[in-house]
Length: 503
Image 1: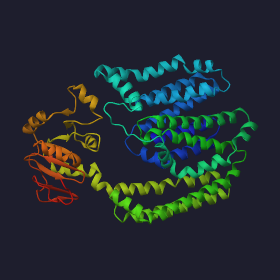
Image 2 (image 1 turned 180 degrees about the horizontal axis):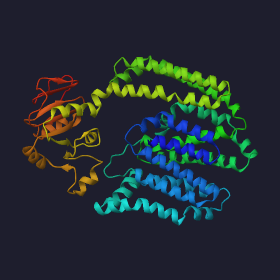
Image 3 (image 1 turned 135 degrees about the horizontal axis):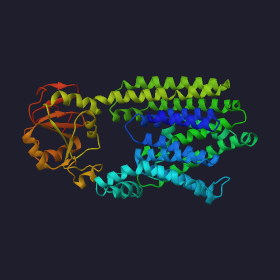
């Protein structure tokens, strides 16, 4: 839904600027970019944050160009919702872009006037009215929250000093390959538009409206570069951090198409972009035939049958590229863009097939089916030391509350340290007491199995064996002690298939 909201926002922005084609191209790029669509299909806050953030940036731009404060107030509401979606990161990124524009590209404004205009008291009041109540309530309910939320999770994470250390590090060029994967199939088109489109000619010829559109494209490109540089400098790295770059590149591409003097002149470079894309597809297919990719599939745990789906994907990609190239050659520019956007379909289909093939061994949904069929009624669910790896999803399947024994979770560090009455973290003594009072089940990741067994708490408990975890149950399990359920086996104390699942 967040990705759809973003596409609607880009379409609306194009209409506001009198450039519907730019909005359509931007929505196509953002809505079908491989990396963006993959992340949009997962339970992450980032896509919702990006949707509201893009709305806020677009409204700020319109407010500045038209000198209308009402757009500033809409931007304030949008950035407030973006902040509530993910945190202060949204305000920091928007502030970075706005500050850069005020200092280096104020346009027809004087810098001091533009700064004063941007800091509209009513807009600031709307932002605080929406965001402050939740933050104040959280700070009052959980002492230390303000420091943890604003300082530890934002500033210290950027500096690589977050407590505890749970961030992913990487070299300065970390986001280069991630961005390539993010806009994957659109790279040849973006390059063609960068080299072939000449928007300045039409912008000079057709007055203020086109000048506004040209400035919006420059703002989008500048914002994308600033965000890319900002996160490249950060010590904490995560591919989803640069999601805002994708719709910004999409809008920039849309403005290049909208502003050319004759859009039909783009037909030849776009056609060559599609043909170049076919060459990339063929290169990937040739690479698939060597042992390197075959070994990678084996490492992922994929069966040999996946090659059939891979062949179908390459054939589909080639056919769609040929269709787009043919449409562009005949100067059907927008139809060509639509055909090219369909490249996302085989890419996502193949990715979904991989997920389905692996779901029996890694999906918590499959594990939960066995647990619901196996566990005694009113069983209390526990996890040994972990939470955020995969066991957290047990909460989505009805195992509430989920208690964490001897928590080593970085995500729950603040909540456990606060030691409130609602803390999900518990100690071994409390667990043993609960075990005596009612049926319990303990989810244990295989890489933590040794430490769990060392506590002696597993004595007398039945084991439910899964690919990446073991669930220990006290009380009578409803799955037979010598039976099997799909890929899952059960036993009393001793694993039935030590070769497949070494302890």
